[in-house]
Amino acid sequence: MNFIHSLQSEWLKTKRSAASWLCIIGGFFIPFIYLIAFLKNQTSINKYPNHIWETHFNELWHNMAIFLLPMGVILASSLITQMEFKNNTWKQLHASPQSYPTIFLSKYSVIFLMTVKFFLFFNIGLILSGLIPCLIVDGALPKEMIPIMAFLKGNVKLFIACMPILAIQYLISLMFKNFLVPVGIGLVGLIGSMIGNSWEYIFLSPYSYCAMQVLPIKRDFNLHVYGLVCFAIISVISYILYIRKKEKG
Amino acid sequence: MNIIETNNLTHRFSEKEIVLNDIAIQVPEGSIYGFLGPNGAGKTTTLKLILGLLKKQQGTISVFGKPFNENRIEILKNIGSLIEAPSLYAHLTASENLLIWQKVFQCPKERINEVLQIVGLENTGKKKAGKFSLGMKQRLSIAVALLHKPSLLILDEPTNGLDPSGIIEMRQLLIKINQEEKVTIVISSHLLMEIEKLVTHIGIINKGSILFQGTLDELHLKQSSYVVFDTNNLEGTTELMNKHNLSPITLNGQVSLATTDKAIISKINAELVNHNIEVYEISIAKNDLESIFIDLTKN
Image (cartoon, rainbow over all chains, first blue to last red; front, side):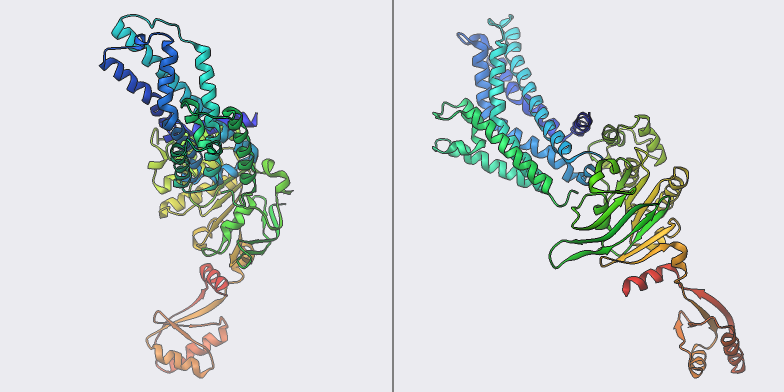
């Protein structure tokens, strides 16, 4: 029960926070652009010959996953963790009757939940940006049903691809007081991975996994296994460093 | 029973820099313990160690009669704290800030309004904590510390940034909490006069070492008395005293002597009159606590 209470308190902290706004704006940004483009061109997803939803899904995720998704994850995880530094509240948190693993996990879980919220908003936006132009322009429903399982599968794969970034950013944000450090490192990692995406050892950079998921890059490794292993290792390192911190406030 | 007891508490930030040296403090149950010392003396470090915010290097800490490290969560359930600057979520209102801690402490939701009333912030409505004045932030931090009805309050310089009326209000609030709810309070400050009307016990720390620990009455015993002569001839008065091998000190147009011996005072008075020096007033004075504190920390 303690974990649930801690999670509830951590979730309350995100109310009206920058990370929360980022989640809403970031989630709806690309779908909104597509919606405007469809309406301006008086067209809809019905123009695609077949697999209209998959095509729409792939197009939107393609634009999202290369830069905006990893950038959103970098910012959200850094903002949530740095909230304690910014408000000088680490000491209050560590002087409360919560075990260190509970504090570590509840904050980590909130970042995960925030990412899930971001995915949720993006998918709602994605569906609306497909549906609304059909209703307005064509005066009819889309000619195919939404392939829920395919959408779910695609979302899970992308979620796994961004998990290592989430772990790295959490680790750095826990260690450094200055917000610019985690964001700067994240940005360098992301841009570096974008530039070097044809390098044979690019799999060493977790910042490249989201783009790899949507770009036709030839790879001879299982991106999702790598992603999960990378996430697990970084999470364990993160926890050890957090526990061993000499000053907790 | 001592609510807090530390023994041989020593802390180093580096090999050469000893911040605390063999600190042994005892905070009796039900007391208001003033922890005094100049800036950088080691007050915050001591309090952080007691709350487990710094990793203990040497010595023992027990709170409520139990070793801290082994009973951290159980002990912290009964402690309310405010360390240094207020710890508040600037984007949330006063109630929302308290709701966060209500979830952690699992105390009744009604306590939120109760503590807001106690600290006089019940009408702040939707105003974000970030828009509060420093005094309001301090009061909200006190509300956070009081939320779960702790039996021990640890407050590190809680009057920082408060105006004189705010300091008086805070003092009255803490006395009320101590007397009505039997909460033991540890309050640190670098100004004795700020807390001398509040505390029952005092610990004075400087350069990482405890210089004095005891009740306020025991500290008063350290006060020395002296006699002040107010005359129309400062030079003549000091000259006459020097002749009697006394060591007068002139200050603010008056002459002070480090004695309260009635025979000496009477003799000096008679001689001053014989030398046609007009004596307006002879009074006995005491060092104030502030000067004892300064003397202790200077030495």
